[in-house]
Each structure stands twice: as structure tokens, then as C-alpha cells.
Image (tube, rainbow, N blue to C red):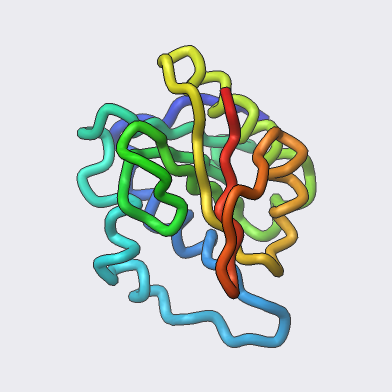
Length: 155
């Protein structure tokens, strides 16, 4: 496995990984792919690379990108303030639970620290198995609503 920064020509992959990042509880039918074109989801990928905190790292296995973590300062579900990048992360299903997501998160946290950021945030549904991984890499729950935790990691 190779972990590397995303290439400009691969930005469209963020749409696929955004769709893969949608948490689907057991027994629930996944939404149609077109859901990623909703305004509240387009902000995760639209014009990516133009913002100061637009960073993306991918995991590649046998010349195939199998996962991505990316950040931007955006008014998303995990938005804390205009100085804190929000995280998005996703892996194709067959590559989950192999430590790849943890490695991606750790690399992105290092990158953000090296770029001068003091913290990062994310939102995650309470039932999502990834909550444990986020805590493992240093995120802490700072707020919650009925469905989600808002988490911050000090860098």
C-alpha cells in the first residue's frame, strides 16, 4: 500500500469517496448516488484544490486508489470555525478494517500540523463504527446532537 497526496487529475474521485462515506446503518437501503449532488454535499468536493485548507491524501493498492481523506474549511456538519479544517474520509468497503483509514488519518493530521493548523474537526453519526478509530487518532467529542458527534483533534 502507498499513501500519497492526491493528484489534481484525481479530484473527481472525491465524489465517489464522498458517496462511500455516507454511513448506512445495517438493513437500510443506500441512497442513490445522485445524493452527492445536493448542495449540502457538493461543498465537500466542488472546486476542490482552490481553498487554503484543501488537502487530500489517498491510499493506493496495486495501482488503484482505494481510500481518501480530505480536508477543507467549509460550513459542513463538523464546522467549528473558519480556521479549522473539516475532515472527510472514506475507503471502499473491501478495504475497511485493515488499518488503512487510521494511517490516512494520521498522515493528514501530520500534514495539517506542518501547515500550521492547530486543530481539525469532523462530524460522525453516533452509530458509525469509525467513531472508535477517530478517538484512537486523537479526536475528542466536543458536542453532539440526536444523531451525530462533533469531534475535534488538537494538533
